[in-house]
Length: 260
Image (tube, rainbow, N blue to C red; front, top):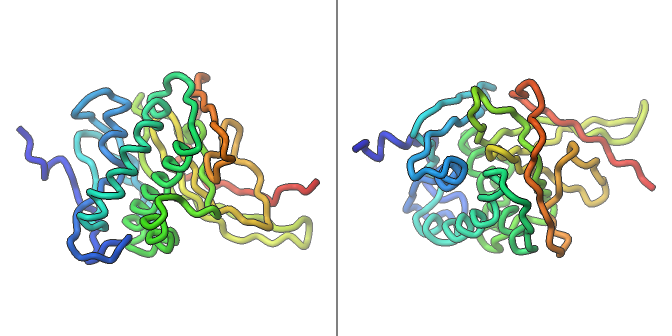
């Protein structure tokens, strides 16, 4: 039997929990094992994971049983609210990850998926940026409230990358985009970070929400989960073929939405 240490690799560590500052540290999977088990329906799935390294601006992908971790959370958080959040999000996300029948997401489901998306993006981004993630400032509030802040949007949509050799893609990809304010010569371009949580047959997109600057919607096929409208939301799996060509470094650009 393979040793557990051969099946995980810790790629980054900190001395204190990023959520509560406790010192009794444990490792958190960059993507929970249930994500891979869901799509392969196997207790020991083989995975193809794409990971982005900053500031080297390089990609690392691998295939096999190994799953990467980051030592950034304490045992209390890992076995407490993070475990409960993983369990709640998994119930709603598994059918979407598998591309199964349409799923009716309650407001509670939408809340859990958004919070889980932020937790996953935060842990991955901290590991990728050696602790300097802009999402880090939301860690304590996420632990306290159990939900993503209202000034972050979470969208569900089709995968941004086609399978590699028939293998679905999983991972978290930071997108360095831009926000275009105004028009013509007076237009101002400012950086806009977003994160794609790639889950095989679907993506979750996390991006800022500006109260006074409405953004254009993401590409066709995306539905906003958060902030929730307060009503149930039906999500249908994608049934058409994936777009040709793999987009290894998506860099979306959103313009200010037209008024009126």
